[in-house]
Image: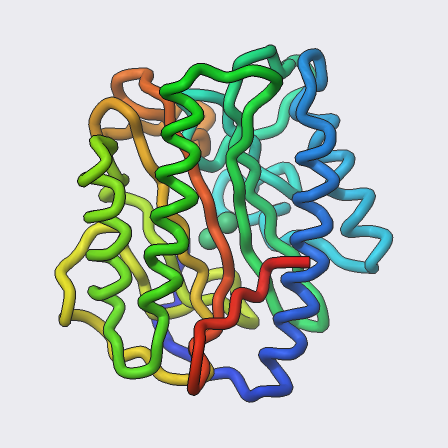
Length: 256
Ligand code: MG
Ligand code: MG
């Protein structure tokens, strides 16, 4: 991932645009979620996402990103795959899988970035618990996105939420500022120490994204140079929202 570490504060008008980007991104993810059925291929999920993006005249910043260029508009990860999975025509969903879908939307020059994990049909109690804890960790982080707090407060909240429930949080992959670029400053790790890091100010827009693993926190990257999996093959989950720091409560941008 290439990073621009600069923090760009957004004006209220820019946050309005990002809210619209977030609304479209939420519609994309909702369309993909509806299609999580046994037998559906991951490339079909990508096609469904692209149809919604296109209907809004939008594109995803994922397509063509990085080196080798990412070939799709969403990432799709099944079970032990944590992030950056490449949609494929031969990859079919099965009953009991958990599927993580991440999408970005560029609207009027601004990016929204969001992800969810959901089950295909009936899933195991452990998988259901993993999803619940990962989503809960995201909201524990969102709650700390307040003027005067620091990024370490967010990181610590995510880490303690996950670890106190017996799961593990990634060390290598982090949340990030988002705006005209998908990755801006500040970086927001999923582990950290309260009271440290960058001071949060109104106008900051940040994508928080806990990535949680059932076995250990260790990951590795597959030979396709994109797909990140748990090192021990255990289940993983990923939830993400783009959120604005305001004078008051945190404003989640990536909802309908
Ligand atoms: Mg994302
Ligand atoms: Mg992100």
